[in-house]
Length: 481
Image (cartoon, rainbow, N blue to C red):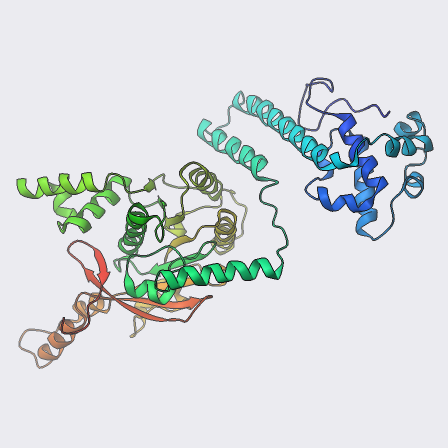
């Protein structure tokens, strides 16, 4: 049969043809089966030309697939003219080679097994290629690339190899889609309209139905509005709910590009104990309060919340770490604090920051779909808010917006009117003081979560209680309670 005249795989380096994992007979059996019955292609749709080791087999497979996709019948007679005077085919017997392919396929029941075997050998060659390239790069010192950068590059390559076949999105029949929709409706009815990951805040869960898998959620606000505090509340409540019943909660990955993991832990301790995190940090607490902290810390020890506080993360690094956490820790939701601190990783690759941020948001949306988890990304708002009399944020205020609004499934703004009203305090004894005090008593400790975009449901405003002393968000009780 056909021998290979090509000695080295592209990118494999010095390893010879005989050393690399391959099976020419299995490849020939696949080609012969396709020539025998074109319908067999539907059973091995996951195979591509790159999975074949022999370069001539790649050419033949490509020609067969092209003809099938054009609706042409592919047989030894119809394909032979395409390879007329091909040196390898002529050497293997010319027209006789095509007949030999069909007659030598053995049992046609083995086509799927042969295809899986070919794919397995391709994965092994890919691993060898990555390993060899990694050795070369590790021995080459570059001023702008650390060993950790190389580790992340290798992880990305290996992960891409491992999920290549598994991430193929297959066409679903309406019957399957309908069954999934009914299952989701059943889950919602069992958990009071909650179909996604819980926020731990009743009014928010009722409005959003929880955070849905594959959704990109943007939580935006001006500085000091409480973005990080609210995101921390979402993360901790979902992780605590997962630990409790494993139904409405999730294991959480929190990428904190601004605050350290220790600061976030202190903030959560403060929220749970009612002791100001500032006092905890300064050590201004009593012995009794310290005992309370220790007790609460032991209670929270098993909460599945994973914090990555690496500064200056690139999208490639974030993607690698998120994939690893999804695979190893089975995380069910990702939170990123915050969007503008991410970089694409491509130096001088974009004309401006808006273009770069557009690629980042698209990458986050793609990652949410790939991992099938909700991703909540915090975002800054432009200073335009401060120039208006009405300080309520709008979609147009999204800083360096690009495609943030377009790519996001949900866009929410956190707004505290009391923050701005406190700075309008009139002089003591003035006529307006009583009016100001009445308004402050009405809006004090109230925060508005403004849902300005939601693909799955209505927009609107959810009112929350905010305790500024411990930066804690909670359900807002009806007036009078």
